[in-house]
Structures are given as structure tokens and as C-alpha cells.
Image (cartoon, rainbow, N blue to C red; front, side, top):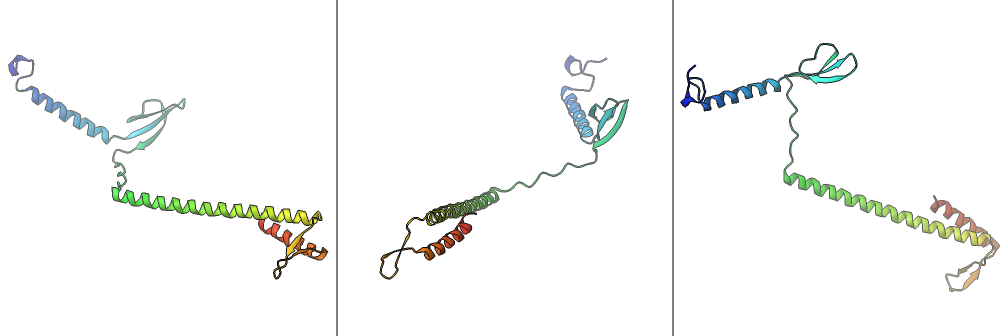
Length: 166
């Protein structure tokens, strides 16, 4: 066997760079071949599963998981920074609107609780016989409530309780 490239053990006509080129071509060909390979899920008699290009002997069930001719799904479109900024502002606007709506709901709930408590207190006072007064709108004078006025006011307070105390 002849010594090529200054006695370094390469075959005649082959240099170090041509060996590297050949190796690179071989790696590229093997990579392309494995990228197009089919992958199977192989289940043996004990129920153990393994994934391989070829199922071994003793496989009782073989299911194709990846076909060699399938093209992987394209990556989703990446949004531009301007579009991301627009989306962010939209989300922030929606959050602010939701927070405002929640604050309004809390305010209405708090108001209902206050009104409910006041109506219950008034009804309790009327039913226990406490002295109740109202102001005369014309003179501003205090007028004690009579029995008929107390009964009417108790009905009105009961209606308010039904309205506010839900």
C-alpha cells in the first residue's frame, strides 16, 4: 500500500481535506435518511412499549407514529413588535374595563348591604314599639307616628328589605 500525503497513512490520492469532505457528505446523507425515517410504537407481549424505526421480533402490536413523508407543521407566524404592542394595549384596556366593572359591582353590593341594614333596623324599631318621628315637610316640625302610620311604614320597610336584602 502506498503512502500518500507525505507519509501520514492516507491512501494514495486522498488528502486530509478530501477525507473531511467525504465524512461531511456521509454525515449529511445519513442525517437526511434519518429525517425521512418512519417511527413506530412497538408493543411486546408483556405490554412494554418502545419507539423505533423497525419493530423487533416478538412485537404484538405495531403503530406508525411518524411517517417518513410527513412534513413537520410550519412554525406559527411570529408577531412583529408593533403588533405585540397593539395586542398588549388591547389586553390592558380590557383589564381596565373589567376592573372598573368589578369596582362598580362592588359599589352596588356595598350600597345594597347598607340599605338592607338600615331597612332592617327601621323595621325592628317599628315592630318593637320604639318612638318614631318624621319631619313635617312644610314646617320642619317633628311629628310622632301613630299606629296607622307605623303600620304603613313597617310595610314600606318590609318592601325595602325584600328589594335590598337579596
